[in-house]
Image (tube, rainbow, N blue to C red; front, side, top):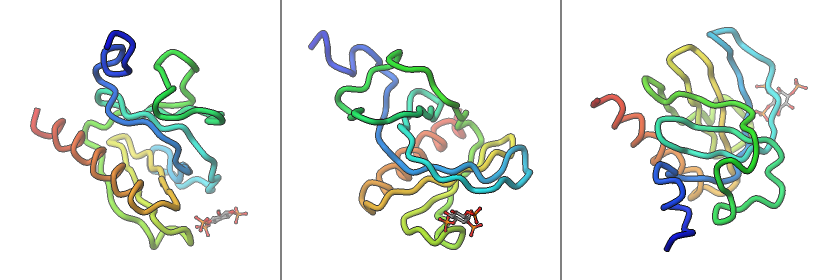
Amino acid sequence: SPDSTDSLSPELEKAGLLNKTKIAEGGRKLRKNWNPSWVVLVGNSLVFFKDPKSQTPSSWKPGNSRPESSVDLRGAQLQWADALSSRKNVFKLRTITGNEFLLQSDTESLIKEWYGTIQSVINRLDRE
Ligand code: I3S
């Protein structure tokens, strides 16, 4: 349909609410600061938005709000990282530039979906 999310943004792969903390910047360790983040996987990037209140995957549209930051997934690495946090269902995303993020959800199925979807984008970029 003309107003479906897909036709407005063909590269939108996934969007949802996750807990996020950045733990390194350019290889330098940072102090953790967990916050909920609206996470959008679009094209080759993972884009983070603040203030996820009232957002839902079906209502989110690109251009509604300004990203807080964005991560290029080319050359990035994912790994489960339960040892890096007291939280469960945590994985680490490391960018090629040495930025590291932990992403977490209390819902195991949800974090597994995110892991799989991000990994498939990384794999696709590795093959290009
Ligand atoms: O890996 P850490 O250092 O134990 O992480 C915890 C701390 O960063 C803590 O803050 P401060 O110690 O800076 O006040 C955070 O509040 C915790 O959330 C961090 O641990 P978890 O296990 O939640 O990732």
